[in-house]
Length: 189
Image 1 (tube, helix red, strand yellow):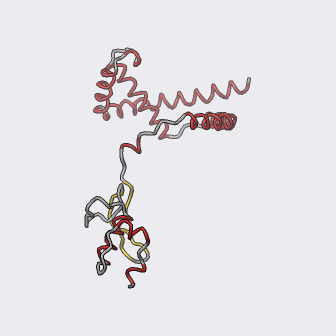
Image 2 (cartoon, one colour):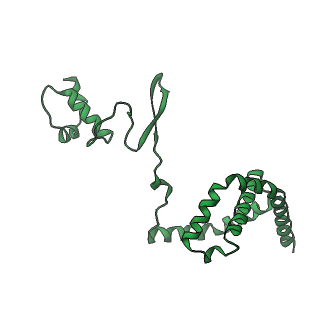
Image 3 (cartoon, one colour):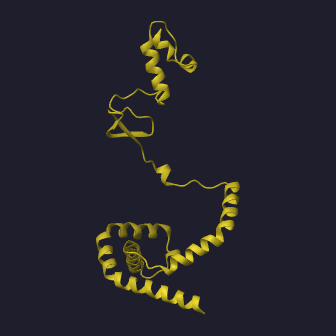
């Protein structure tokens, strides 16, 4: 009788109840709770649907599976906003616009740190190689297929891009200093 006290009403709705089979009921209830109703439960993966096991971890002195969410392509693509969501975002950004402008102004006065400078140098190097491969044709005038082809070639040239970025780093640092000095000159007028 002890096994039946742990069952809920939903267990009896989703599982065919047969007296004397509490193990089957608890097994099916566990499958329902973990989302594995229509699928066979794999013994080596005790995690829920859309979670994968990455080793084990200690919890309350016991070793339990470490379940982490699986990364899917759907998570990387942001969903389009509905009209109502767009309006809400618009209102929010209009309300926050002065604060955003102030933060942007403060940020522009600061010197860029090394990782940010390296990122800028890498972007400039990539842009230089893109222009060279496209024979200085503007990006918007290229066909989609041609742009994709050039992007694939650039993805294979990461080593070359990094070398060019390293050479461009002093130039990027100078540009950052000039940007800050020109902004401070504009603020003084």
